[in-house]
Length: 142
Image 1: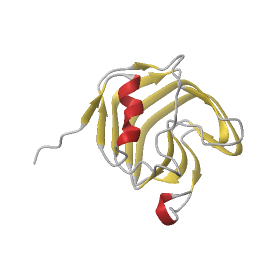
Image 2: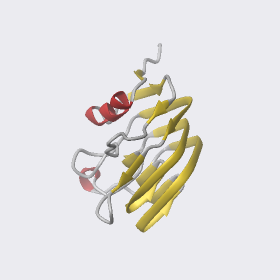
Image 3: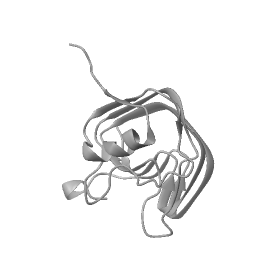
């Protein structure tokens, strides 16, 4: 069996993961996120990210989001039972209720080979990789 993942080569491709939260994805290029209007992947309304994301050793540079104290701020807002690996997040700036470089809230199956640099501010929780680890509740809500 051959594993086929959707290739991500632009910021728009990355944001489009929101349309299939259980898919398998691989980053094929470094991405410049400076000035990109980012929305975290996975949330309490659309559901958590449950797929696979392989950064393939690439860097996402300059990703930022200011959600004040109201919402999650991270690459992934809500993520459960997923695999996220091999990605570098450089020069991030996240501010939110729960803020992290990689996952604001969730409980992934596997997170590995992750590098995060930048500024992260959380009203209720903050972390370089994950701000809040918790079990999923009914319907995937946090």
